[in-house]
Amino acid sequence: MASRQTLHDLPRLYSAAEVATALDCSEWWVKEQARRRRIPFIKSGSGYRFTKEHVQEIFNILEQRPQETSTQFPETGATRRRVRTQAGTPVVQLRARPPRRARNVA
Image 1 (tube, rainbow, N blue to C red):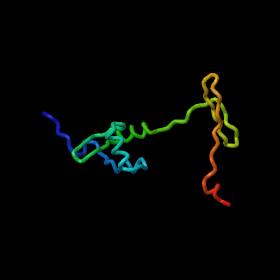
Image 2: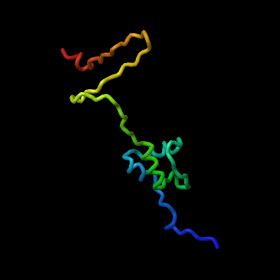
Image 3: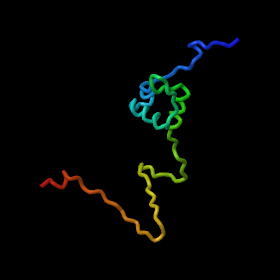
Image 4: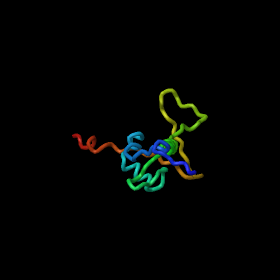
């Protein structure tokens, strides 16, 4: 005898709007990522749907972990820039241009 699943046995499905609220982003972004197959989803007749496991996996995909570095930064909060060059290529330091409003003041 085959067992019948009830509605209580089925996983809850979340809409793109609910996922967007949880991620603090737009509903369009969630739908676009699903359309481009960058995040897991279920495509139903009413659009993109997400299970609790899908949402957890999306959080894992978007998670940014700090990089472990052996160098300690100074306590002033300044960061050190690394310059990568090919052998023999001179390094050119770029300078920011002053804003136009600052140049037009007479």
